[in-house]
Image (tube, rainbow, N blue to C red):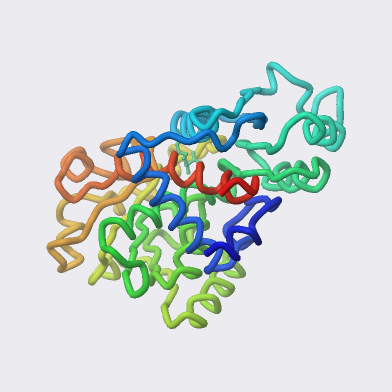
Length: 317
Ligand code: CP
Ligand code: NVA
């Protein structure tokens, strides 16, 4: 594990494909330790003297709270900035902003629209950049999801996760990548119009085959059969508000309700959602609030995985 953590020093997380499965394994182990320490009231000061720039083009509750508290409680100083506050792509080029931030901060955490913006920040700043959601990827969420699965089932390899809904969005794409790397069988179930990107699907299928698991995409809900976890996300992601009416039509048949959960044929299937949730759309109140729901664990684990990621990449783990 020490070797993997050392290998992560100085690295960015723009998409989970940036990391090997043994590196994700090491991060999850560190995150479990961070959670155990916090629950035992054990504190550390591993980010003293370090600063984190947090650039947000979109709103956030969990991601912002996770990174800001994880960094601050270890003695680091996080600075939250939006395009209202700084010259982000207006008046000054992104590359220039990145070079300035790289001289003042030890790392940058970005949430926004284009994946290319996260990539450019990493290219020009010279410090680790953490992608806290773009239109196409949400890797730090999936670290927390893998941690939640592992805590609940005490393993990852051989589990089956069925993602139901908008199967080409940021959550679905990152889940597919993360599951493929970690040996979790992954099947997305949703309308053909919102199927996963074929090139990404093919790459994930190859990654999964290498560790003896499977990745697939389907339109028929009977494909949730056998799933250990059913995961869904909002039907309309941030920035796609104009699509709302069309999405409701397309995704209506894919609402996760009690009957869909029963369709796994597995009485122990858990329900997962990255949040925020629109109850009555992608999930019923009954399932969301039901005993199978692990959504608050997922939310809490955002903090522990964010801490682990920063500890490793800042060489403090
Ligand atoms: N799951 C997630 O990223 O939540 P926020 O949008 O609140 O950060
Ligand atoms: N797909 C959602 C995820 C929110 C955390 C969105 O992009 O809005």
